[in-house]
Amino acid sequence: MTAATIINGKQISEEIREGIALEVQQLSKQGVRPGLAVVLVGDDPASHVYVRNKEKACHDLGFYSEVHRLPADSSQEEVLALVDKLNKQSSIHGILVQLPLPGHIQEKAVIDAIAVEKDVDGFHPVNVGNLVIGDDSLLPCTPAGVIELIKRTGVEISGKHAVVIGRSNIVGKPVSLLLQRENATVTMCHSRTSNMPEIAKQADILVVAIGRANMIDASYVKPGAVIIDVGMNRLENGKLAGDVDFASVKEISGPITPVPGGVGPMTITMLMKNTLLAAKRLSG
Ligand code: GUN
Image (cartoon, rainbow, N blue to C red; front, side, top):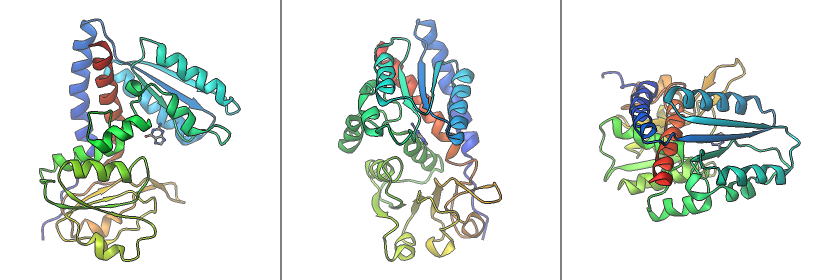
């Protein structure tokens, strides 16, 4: 049997970024420079790394960017006042509030306060509702990246059985909706599913976002299936691991994403794509 194709998320992401950078140049000539504001509250080390990466992507692709780093003891009112200011600021087309927020701040209150047309995370309930209905909304970044990776394998989604493992609001649920939109037959599995290997083994396309390192081994996988691993688990030895046991699964699967270098690089690229789209819509 020939070895599975490894889906190169980094390279695909770079190709998409080149296209975005060109569009940003063109839009800038018309006097519109897409702008992203990121709000980071507190000292979570992982969040600081993610935000630096977003800032760098803005710089590399020619976006205007602002990063607002607020102390951990900022009040909810202070965060809401900043969001309100950014909603009204014409140089800003996209607003992203980095999650998680400190415990004393209600995430829902903050997300609800972001202007729907600037919600480049796609987390606002109106954008979530538009996603369910199939309206043209800002799509959540990681799920949009997952669909893009599947499409670029060349494997047809329409008519296939897709199984999504994990039902989070930011990955599992929206991925299942986007797969249905692409005419897949979708089954959702989660931590309480009793016969997960049997169900997963029926999948032509298996998307895993359950947050448990190396949980999905070859016993969950139909030979030749497309495997998309959204997991990002930090092991005790400091290394990153996905939710899929890559070494065993790649021996029988079809195209498969590695961790790192699969879904991860796509998330920020889709954020940039959303910010560009928001800028075009707000200025057009
Ligand atoms: N924290 C981890 N992932 C994300 C994301 O996609 N968006 C935001 N806002 N915060 C996150």
